[in-house]
Each structure stands twice: as structure tokens, then as C-alpha cells.
Amino acid sequence: MTSTLDDSEKEKAHSVSVDLNNDASLLIDIPDALCERDKTTLSSFQKPDFSVPRQHEDFIWLHDTLVETEDYAGLIIPPAPPKPDFESPREKMHKLGEGEATMTKEEYAKMKQELEAEYLAVFKKTVQVHEVFLQRLSSHPILSKDRNFQIFLEYDQDLSVRRKNAKETFGSFFKNMVKNQRLHCQGREDDPLPQKLLEKLADLFEKLRKVEGRVASDEELKLTELLRYYMRDIQAAKDLLYRRARALADYENSNKALDKARLKKLTSFKGRRVVAFRKNLIEMAELEIKHAKNNMSLLQGCIELLKSS
Image (cartoon, rainbow, N blue to C red; front, side, top):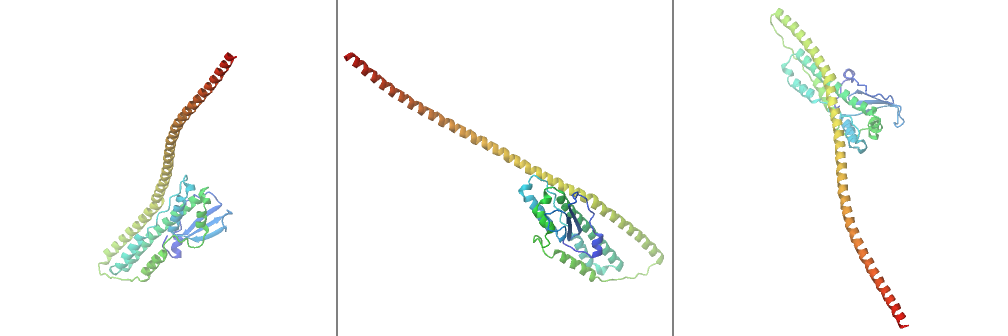
């Protein structure tokens, strides 16, 4: 979301929302590609209604922050919205400006209208995927209470995580191209009847091309983007399974290390126990021999005393 449009174009490019936010306590809406609006009844927010400017890099920062949080290691983090591709319309606009001298007024206006329609299609897709990302977070019972998510929603200053002046650069480029356009008209002196027939036929094909273009754009917006979104969602689930498998492997390795350490301790204890028992038995036998000798000496003395008496 690094570009800007006129107010009329912004109204046309409003997002086609996917209702994922079943919790009415926190409502999120992106009215255009540069701002997101929130309404909430939760006491953790400072205000019940607020609007803040955000760009694509801010969404990536929020996604990476949630992924790196250890408390959410067992949760499926919604996939980050893809970076909007405004480079293709920009390059086409540049080429249109370079080839302006070789076009008629009608051809230039027609090409310009096509580029604007292409730009609006990218604009709508950008708004939709970013809004779906926020709605999935707000509908999650745990992620919706994340402090970084609340800061993202209500902090009305720059988050300082994105590149500056990107939208201003493309906005000024787009306005300058429209402002500095030169109109060239070339007359022809052909037979009027075939010329009119060809013009009507060309208008017919042009209308058909526009209709097919709108159909293709709608199909891409409704189907292709949905498939791409679920591909990213499946990848997030695969990442969760990988983290769980890695945790299980660490647990099994820890158990193996514990068994080895326990066996080593038991073997060492058995050796020390045998040595201690042998030592104590030897000492006890020596003491019994000593006491037996003393008793024998005492008995011999008594016998000699009895004999002498």
C-alpha cells in the first residue's frame, strides 16, 4: 500500500470484504489502501472508534512479531498479505508517456483508461487481502488480545517499520504523467463509408474487450486470490506441523539422553555399592576375629586360674 488515488477512484476501489469477524466487540474496516478503521467495545482499547494510517510493511511487522512470539508456537498464524505489485502499472504508464508522440488523442485516452482500470484492480485486491488478514486476527480468541496487535490497531503515529515516501513518489509520478500529457490528432482522407464501418466494428470489439477484461479481473479477484490465500493458509498449517514435529524430536532426543545418563548413573552406583559392601564386610570380619581372640584369651585365663586353684 504505497500509492494514492483521487477520492472518486478510492470510492470505486473499496474492498470487497470477506466476513471473518464474527466477534462484534472488535470491528475492522479498511476504507482505502492507506488507512484502517476500527470500532470496539473492549476495555483494553483507549477509544471505542479510531482510524490509523498503515502501510504494507506494518502488516509484515505485525505478522513476523506474532510468528516470533514463543507463546503462539502452537497456533496457526494467519498468512501475511502479499506485497502489492504496482510496478507493472508504473512501467506501462512510463512506456505510454514515451510513446505519446506516436498516438492519436483517442488512442492515448483509451490506453490511459486501461492502465487506470488495471491499477484499480490491483488496488482492490490489495485492500481485500490486508483486510482479511486483520479480520482473522481480530476473530481469533488469543491473537486478538495480543499487545502488538492492539498497538497496531490504535497507535495513531508512524510505527517506523516501513520505507518513507513510497506512496508520495508514485502519486506524484501518476499525477505528472496525467498533467503533462500532450494530445496529437492525425487526420485521414480515406473513403468515408469503409472508414465508418471499420470504426463501428472497432468500437464493437473494444466494448467486447472491456467486458472480457472486467470478467477476467473479477474471476482473478474472486477465485485466483482465494486460492492463493488458502495456499498461504495451508503453508501456515504446514509450518505449525513442522514446529510440532521439531518439538517432538527434541522431546525424544531428551528422553534418549536421559536414559543414557540414568544407565550411566546406575552402573556407577552399582560399582560403588559393591566396593562399599566388600569394605564393610572385611572390616566386620576383622572385628569379629579380634573379638573372638579376646574371648579366647579370656577363657584360657579362666581355665588356668581354675587349674591353679
